[in-house]
Length: 443
Image 1 (cartoon, one colour):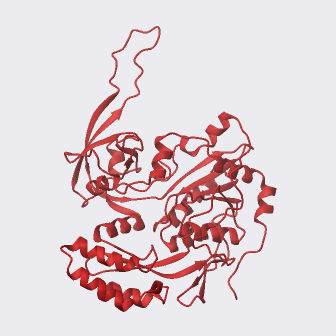
Image 2: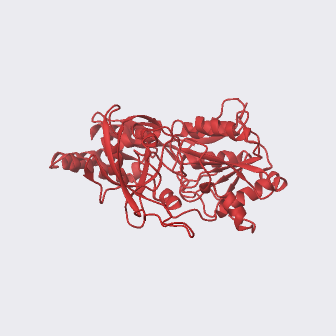
């Protein structure tokens, strides 16, 4: 507790500590922690001390939760590479997809399989996170998974002798060897647009360490297919590493534009964060999709692309509004302290904290035929990237509920995607909407 108190005292962005006497806070909670009956109760006292700061992002993660954070940030894990989540209606553990080339993929596990047991343990009532912990482990070790698979056999065809009726489901048990699995946070595909061209669609689920490289490689693949523009989908992307947001920005922006500005304890501007002088992978027209689930690094990137007049931001609601930056301090017991150390603004000076970014335009697509809508739905197409799914975290790491709903309940008309593609098709309107001067760093 003293270690956490010292770190906060030296680095927390608010020098008034939310109006509390920080020395008195330590004294009060140290006494309570000393009297705590066990480690979880002591952790609770530290959490209570931090909550008095009034900043929800300054928090202590216990060792197990911090390891989950490390996995999601590093973009790789020791496991089997199976994307799973709780089915929203009945709560079953549902396989969303295997990661291409992973042990789960090689074992023949399919999207839609229901996980019934892991290493002989019944998974009824388990959360995706519980299942993730059991699927991960040291490379070279074995894990057994029992699945129920729905069959799609047609019992009979008119004019032919009847065939034996296949059961609606069948059980499958597979044994897999855990190994290092590289996780891509990206799904991408080249989609036909209403004007007869092709648009590159990129769904970025999180800003993990490999996000920039994944987007760069995807752009190279999509350019080879002859796409005319791009849709970068940041909906329900909660953020991640700020450096990864900068890496993705480089893919789309030339020169050395300003990404955001940072202010510290006293509120004065400490620095401009700019890209080093360099070249983008593409200068083709770009639209960005956001929603209220777009937060943190998603807001840094969308704000930078918009204020530098590189992209049009589209959505029906403002973004989350997290304009604070945290540093992570690893503690002696394996836990980690996340401390808000600065606030940021977009290159144009917009303070988004608790306000969010308001999109340039709402999702108002033109009316098109049903056949075209099917063509425009990325979930109806095979993934070009290493993950055969959309908006999915790795599993070993459970996917978010929004991702589950979009996959499990089936594809529907995506109004925001259709709007973005319509704007890309109308290049003159997009040029007018993004016209302006890049916000560059001072010489």
